[in-house]
Image (cartoon, rainbow, N blue to C red; front, side):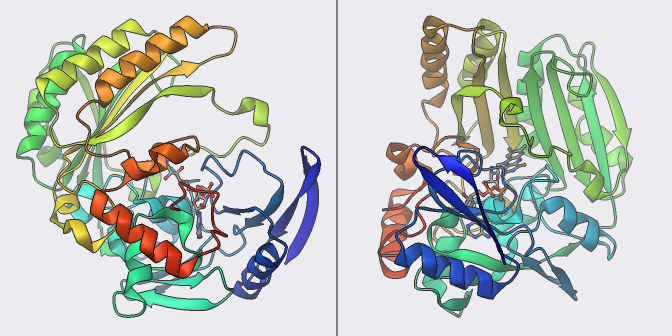
Length: 418
Ligand SMILES: Cc1cc2nc3c(=O)[nH]c(=O)nc-3n(C[C@H](O)[C@H](O)[C@H](O)COP(=O)(O)OP(=O)(O)OC[C@H]3O[C@@H](n4cnc5c(N)ncnc54)[C@H](O)[C@@H]3O)c2cc1C
């Protein structure tokens, strides 16, 4: 274990523990509890608490990053990143449903759910979880699964970092020989792209997953305007083309189809070292929606048109995501068919308070009718919003699991269940 105290937060220093073993984590949790230090847990470092230093203790898990393969079971250290996992298990022809970014941590993404390219075929990242090793608030090392401490295992699957520090995740991986990737851009009418995409996905095979983006011009890798990225889990390029023919046929639309390895479609987006280079604030939010109806589409189009520095982003759900029964994990809204995110960038000096208020009001119109907020994309700590990240029954159950496993709320720098 290495211990450093370089960060000064207000009047107090933040003690940084770079854990290398489970024993290091046990020792650090014990110290944080005894000294009542406010504890931040960091895996991939993309969550809001990782880049808002706070006085107390910060346990960094990035050195606990082992990946072991045993048949189709994959044991992953609590500090590994999805890029490393995809690269290692891809060598064996395996994949796990993950997010879409290589540098995102297995820890934060999995515990919050994990929506990605394979969600319609295999479910969320957390739906592949079959066991976990957890250092709990009292410093115990607990093995958990559907049969060992099932209450804790249930809560870990969607309840975030509230219940302990996961030092090892056990996943059931899948064989994935190849994928087909499609980029569709150039259409002039975003409404027909959204409606066409919605209609296609109503009956599409589970092999097909799409994301929709409408962003301002940022850089050459992210051209402005409405575009669609799609993945077909399999080797058949024509299957992707055929499934998305109604999109490919839209006015101005051009398609680029490639056959990369799964690990190569995970974007590289490392955490900037310099806090000044972090992305600007975001005024908006996200939601899981039962339907992408015409009214919601109209609200999204109006939002994007009204605010030049704004983004609209959607991901298809359904398929295997909806096969998982609502009460078997803590993740909300299994009957959602779309994930939607919309917001404007809060660029200091470029927008004023009046514009901020307008963006927020327009977002609140989109928010109407959502089933739940997806906590992993809620980029600030908002205690009042946490209940809205779960179904009512699940939230009460999470509270009782929290009371049992972490009565002193040692693990509180997260979307905190109290
Ligand atoms: C560029 C980018 C791309 C993203 N893409 C996706 C995506 O495709 N799909 C998706 O679903 N989400 C995505 N997200 C959201 C992402 O899931 C969350 O930001 C997630 O919390 C990041 O996890 P992390 O381990 O990198 O972050 P961290 O900041 O290290 O962790 C976030 C929180 O998770 C908890 N935690 C992390 N590891 C552990 C552990 N081992 N044990 C206990 N608690 C732990 C802690 O409470 C911590 O504060 C993306 C975010 C970004 C910034």
